[in-house]
Image (cartoon, rainbow, N blue to C red; front, side):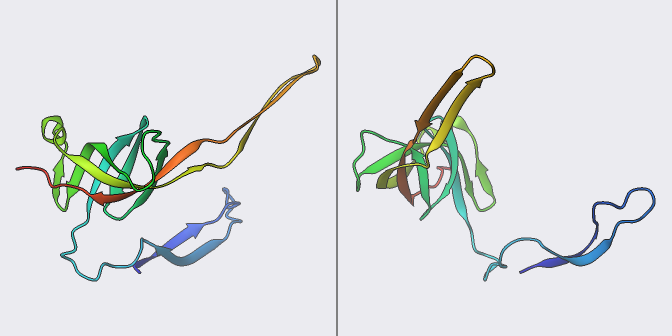
Length: 146
C-alpha cells in the first residue's frame, strides 16, 4: 500500500484556532501491482440505458435481459475501450467491437418503499418496488482493429 503524510485541521478550528490538528497517513489506493507491465483492459458498455465499466472476469448487475436464459451468451455495445495506453473512442471502430458476457443469474434487487402523504387531507399512499436484475460475467473484450 502507498501512504502519504497528511495534516488535517478538524472541524471547530474557526478563527480563534480552537480546533485540533491531526497528523496521520492517507491511503492512496490499493496494493501496488506486482509487475509494472501488467496491462488492464477494460471497456465502457451500454446496457438498459446505463453505462458500466467492465473488465474480463467481472460480474455486473444490469437491468433484466428478458430474452436471455442462465448460461446464454449476450453481446453488449461498447462506448469506449482502454487497452493499456491505447484508448479507443472512435464510433466507427467501436461499432465492430461487442463485449461478450455470460448470463449468471436473474434476481430481484432490494425493496424500496414509496410513500405519498399530503398534510391535513387524509391522503396517504404506500407502494413498494423491487427492480429485476440480470447478473452477467464478462468473458471477452475484443481488441480494436488498428
